[in-house]
Image 1 (cartoon, helix red, strand yellow):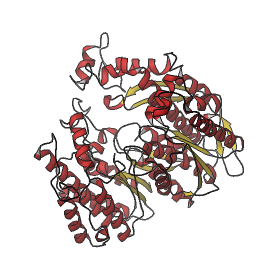
Image 2 (cartoon, rainbow, N blue to C red):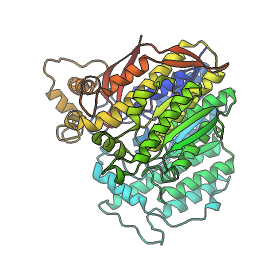
Image 3 (cartoon, rainbow, N blue to C red):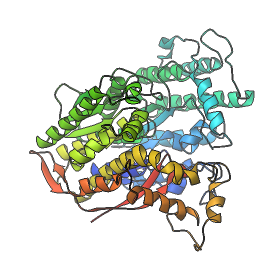
Image 4 (cartoon, rainbow, N blue to C red):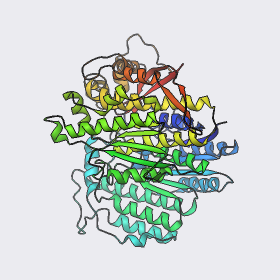
Length: 584
């Protein structure tokens, strides 16, 4: 019998909703979420479907959480940015720099909820990122880059030992000391603000202080396990450094269970895995194997540390243990050397790719649960396809039975890829090893989970988006004809001949033009670079088998037929898509 899980998403993007539904279902949970109208974000030029603001509704979500508790739900994962600011973008530009009665009432209810008998609550929050959100509340890409550059400057060093205090008032004084140094460089001189105005800088500082005050009060009064993520940071000291040190020391002083890592979009998946491992009282042993020679280089420009450090923090957050001999193997391809690839194929890197694929095949042969993460740099992947060099994705599709993997990812940042792969793969392993057998709904959810990751991360994010969409889909969404310049809705309405109304899953009459183009590119286009990538993935998955139990040796079943439909672009950015998955 499936257990109920109440999940408050960060916003309505597929990475925060669809992936969680599939991963939670694959781990034996009946995941429930609030009405998406109460969680949705709307960017500039987009009209909400219901008469409300452009962010989520914390009050309605709070009432929903209480109803879930009364209905017998005992497992909760709650994104605090959604509760206090209506989502991730809202947390970077909330309606106020202060904490008022609304925030205090939300904290009071969460404290009471967390104190209820047998409730397991996992709170997810962020350290505010360096940059603003593009196309939100009047800010564009120019402001995004300006704020990121401003935030990346190192600030004056602080005595981090002073942050270790269980006293709430003393902690708030420490926050004020941190905020007082926001505008000063490491020598105490006023930082240059570039094109940003004083008013914009003051708001930026005020928003950061507000976030610290909110998490400080939550830590002080509310029991639970906390996942705090550095939202879009970089591997050097920044304005975030003192904030992260403060949170870490305060968590230690208050003896709160917590993890602090770089991966905001997928932090809900990490909390899910911790929830599953806590439920069964286990800490899976994970053997990590790196292929490539850059495990100790910085993960990417949005992380706070090296790839190895990021991997270890994700596994720690998931409630797993890194061991020389593991119950699960995590195979990771590290960064490639772009300067070599631009001129000729890197023979050593090709050897590493093929060694990873061989390891995956051997693991499948001996029934070792396996997770794969491609942490190579994105430019390397694109160049390898365009030059016809060996790449991991084609090797996986042609040589590995993808449905036998616990998880795969290479979506967006390295931290995101780790969050997806660790979050979905470890949760699935724990369920197969310790959960009840025979739940077909869990196995069908797993098929959707691995399908979504492979089709989206390989066929779209790595391949299709770069090769075909600059001349098709991105033309409508991101370039001159798209909403970024004139407004997506007006453009689509003007190009909607013969359509009187939109489908229930579309947002406006003309959206079908973009969605049809998206589906055509994903499923029907051919070409030297593309070569029916999504169809090859579906053929691989549909012809394979999947593990359905790991209790007394591995038991497998055949994967049902898979059909994809209703391709769509969430928030009308070609950065993020969703689609429906139907199983026979």
